[in-house]
Length: 378
Length: 168
Image (cartoon, rainbow over all chains, first blue to last red; front, side, top):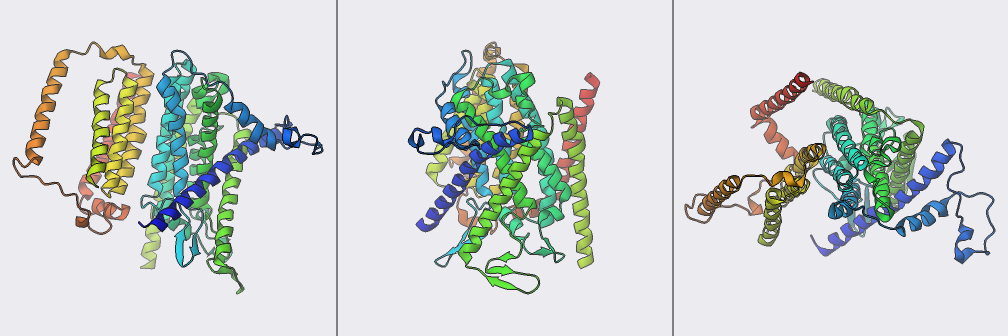
C-alpha cells in the first residue's frame, strides 16, 4: 500500500464521516419540525437567525420560524453546556464509557456502504467506498450486533431500575430482530450471488423489462418489508421504542444521562436510522444507480445518447445516493410519528412468529426460483 | 502478522482473560470476555481469515455475550457472590494452568520438535479466507459435519423449548 492509496482512503473515510455527521443534525430538524407538522403543532420556534448577536438588528425578523437555528445551533449548545451528572451509586467507569461504546459501531458501520461507482482522476480509478472489505454484509451485521452493548451498559451502570429494565428490553429486542434482519439479507445475497455491497450495487444497473429501473425491490419485495421493519426495530425507534418507553420507564436506558452524554445517545439513534436507510438504498433501491446514467453519460432506451464528463457522473451518483438515503430517513421518521408503540408481547410475537417465518419462506422461495431459473437456462 | 502486533495483542488478550476469572464484579468479567472475543477476531483478521473474524464478532461478541450479560443483569448478581468461592478451586485451577503452560512450552519450545508455527503469508492459497473459499470447503469437504452440526443446534433449540414448557 503506497502513500497515495493511503491518502485516498483517508480522504474517503473523512468524506463519509462528514456526510454522516451532516445528515444527522438534518434528521434532528426533520424529526422536530416534521412531527410538529404531523401533529398540527408549531414545533421548534424559539430562536431565529436574528437572535444571534452577530446579526441582531441587521436582519429583519422573519414572519415565520423554520426552526433551523433553534434545532441546529441553540439546542446543541444548551445540551453541551448542561451539567454532566453521574448519579451516586452508579458505576462511574461504565456510565462514562457506555455512550462511546454505543457511538463507535454506529459510526464505523457506514464506512462499508458504497456512496458512488468510481471516480477517475489522473488515470487512477478510485472506488467510492471507504472500506472495501470482502466480508461485506457480514461486517454490517457484526457492527449492528455490537451496537447493543452501549445500551445495555448504560442501563446497568446507571444503578436505576427503569434504566436497567430499558437495557434488558433493548438486548432482548435487538437479538430477536437481528435474526429476521439477517435472514432477509440472505434472500438478497442469494439473488445477487455475492455479499459485496459494491457488487450488489453494480448488478442493479440497467433497466428491467425495458421500463423499470433494475433495482433489488423488484426481485426481493418481501425481504425489503422484513428488512425495513427489523431495521426500525434495531434502531429502537417508535413503534419499537420499548427500551425508552416514556410512560413506563421515564426514558429507559438513558434516564440517568444528561448533557453531552445524553445527546450522544440521541445522535446514535439518528445514526442507526441513517445506516438502515443507507442499507435499504444500497440493497433494494439501486444505491447510487440513476436510471439511464452510465459511466460515460446518459443512455436512453430509445437510442439517445448524451455524453457527460466522468466527474459529473460521479457527483450525480453520490447525490442520487444521498437523496435516496434522506428519503428513507424521512420515511422512518414519518412511521415513528404515525404508529403507536407496541406492547411488549406484541413486539415479541411480531419478531418471532411473523417476521422470522416470513423471512424463512422468502429464503426458500428465492432458492427455489433460482434453482428453476438455472435449470431452464441449462 | 508480525511479532510486535502479536505480542501487543497477546498481552491485551491474556490480560483480559485473567480479568474474566479474577474480577470480583460479574458484569466486568463478562465485558472482559467480550474484549477477549473481539481480540480473537482481530487475530483472525491479521491471519487473513476475514470471514471467520466477522463471524467471531457476530456470533460470540454480538449474540452469545449479549445473552450472558442479559442473564447476569436479570439475576442481578452481586459482587460479593464470588467471595465465598472455595480456595481449593483456585489452587487446583492454578495447578492445571501450570501443567498446560508446561505442555505448550515443551511442544513449541523445541523440546519435542513436533510442532512448528507457520505464519508466512506466502504459503496461503489464492482467495484464502474469502467467503467463496470458505463456503466451497464447507459445502464439499465438510458437508456432513456441517449438516450434523446444524441438526445438533436444532435439537438444542427444541430441547430448550421443551424444558421451558415443562417448568411453566
